[in-house]
Amino acid sequence: MAETTHVDIDRIVAAAVRAGAALAESTPGDRVRWLNAAADAVEEAGAELVALAAAETHLPAQPRLRSELVRTVFQLRLFGRVLSDGEFLRATVDHADPAWPMGARPDIRRMVVPIGPVLVFAASNFPLTLSVAGHDTAAALAAGCPVVVKAHPGHPELSVRTRDILVRALTEAGAPEGIVDIVHGVDAGVTALRHPDIAAASFTGSEAGGRALFDIANARPRPIPFYGELGSVNPVIVTAGAVRARGAEIAAGYVGSFSLGAGQFCTKPGLLLLPAGHGLGETLRAAVESVPAQEMLNERIAGGYRAGVSRLREQPALTVLSAPAPDDPEFRPTLFTVRAADFVRAPEILGAECFGPESIIVEYRDGEELRAVLGVLEPGLTATLHAEESEADEVRALLPTLTRLAGRLVWNGWPTGITLSWAQQHGGPYPATTAPTFTSMGTAAVERFLRPVAWQGFPDAFLPPALREDNPWRLPRRVDGDR
Image 1 (spheres, helix red, strand yellow):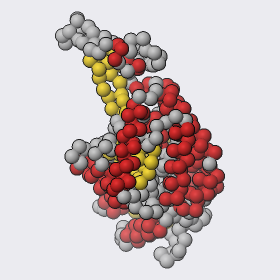
Image 2 (cartoon, one colour):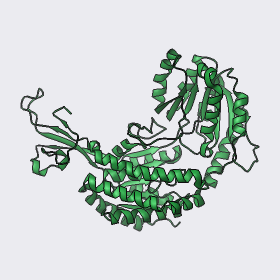
Image 3 (tube, one colour):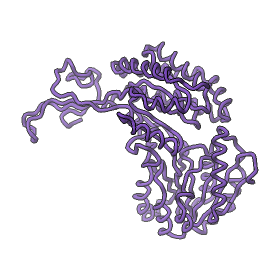
Image 4 (cartoon, one colour):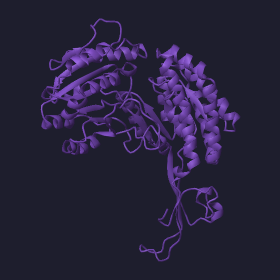
């Protein structure tokens, strides 16, 4: 696909600015209608989109891409529910109060408004759910922001077709022209990120790529919010009690989770912390060897994975528990083991994310060694704990550390498979994300593309409907401190 020129980027962003002015005047009901129209159109074109995605990414149509299509349609409609609820506006009214303890208080009313045109960097590993019609696009449209998508080179034809479907559905439903468009090429993505009329950007991908873009966003004459989701090693901690109670079940679940989709998930568990003497070695080996070969998304990702595994094989502290031959052309899971004491000597190598079907078992002798391993880990998206409720003291001792490490804590489950809901949190301290106070998944993701504004002393006729005295949209509001 040809690189988008600077002239075309200016044209696309200018159209987004014009669309943004119309979007700022739209009602939540308007945007609900537009999102539902987009969902219907994507669903209707599902067979075509799945076929294109399968051809460009090596991902299987069934069940992977079909389920991804269902998720893409669902999240468009879910953000419609966010708009219908109205709470996302966070409307707050403080009436004038001459007896306010801080001195006479003027009438102040606060809510959030669209931040402006959003640049979305599409992801490689979810060509539908995290691409042109993906979660970030849905969240930005719900917020009232036009979207420019930097299409991923791993699925360019799919990106163009999805854009065309979205644009037609949105404009036929009454949305302004320029509400969604795409650009192609690395340089085009950087140029768009530097464009003075882009108000925010989102990204899902590698730490190196995300950090480079984050630095560009902050080096602009007028810096903008950059919401980067950069990946994670996602440690899984298993206690001795859990091993005794259900060790074989945990082993099988772990292998299934880290090998799912050839390990090409940002939530893949890259570390399994097991107590020494766990006795699960043969069970784990058998589970790994039963996983069939899988294809990776593209040659660039496959090459990066092979290079990462080769570097790990060179580490003398690691022992290979199960792995294909180094020259095996197929992609099968690789599983290493290491002692906790050796891990803490080289966390920058052994604790780094390896994108693909690889994981490391870290064997700890006691609580002190376990805490030492957790103490050298970089923060991430998730941390999982397999334990028994009878181990209350051990669990409580670990929770502060796990809370510091991750944005989502999982109890006796697996981090892969992120449901979309009101309570979901997909984020974490850097380097998991560049904005740890937000989420890139779930309904709260809309908050990234809204900014608060307060109106002080305005007559009712000039206030946004959400803040008027008669509350015409019947929104949930905080009034004078009370709900």
